[in-house]
Length: 241
Image (tube, rainbow, N blue to C red; front, side, top):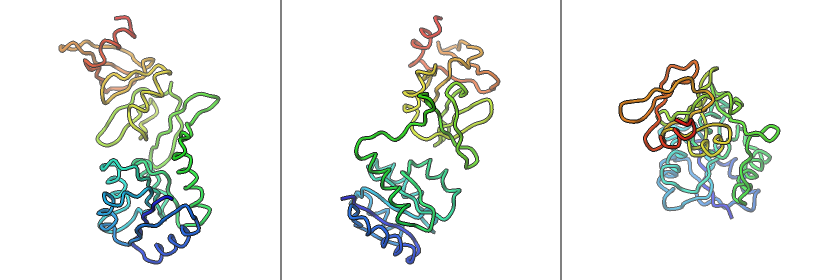
């Protein structure tokens, strides 16, 4: 059984959600509430497998619930319920499994549950590939873009976001920097700093620094990319310097 919390500040919407979820025998609703504080306080004790949460709510919104799940390092998966497509980017940032546009229907829920089933059975989430080659998916102005690894210049951590920089603009990425390191190294990328990945084929110049490290200049970019001491040996070996 999948232990579920449902959360929506509108009772009618919550009742409709629960009515639909009860059609799925694999789901067990252990808490249903219109109060986000109640849901938030129950995360640690109930440790649900899945949360269906409205994003737009007063006081505490669904996004904060998802952020708390990440903070507590729970295995809980989150599916957002929303009336607005622009929240897709927010769902993307907090690792939500899916988001369902209102009105909630049986088929929409089934589609979301199928995603969860794939993950729980150990099947990897689909990688975005074309003709066997890895592709990067990033967001910009609430739109999703597909970028070839060779077109990316560097990836940087910026506050809570991971940013891919290209000559055509910047894109917000999902997943950790370690995930991107693992997938992009075969395409000539290198982890040069705890907060940076760089496409070695986009390097224009390398500047030695006073502390036995380097700064890297990327084609048509002003930002200097640091190479920290942790990665300096491998960096020098790659470039034979």
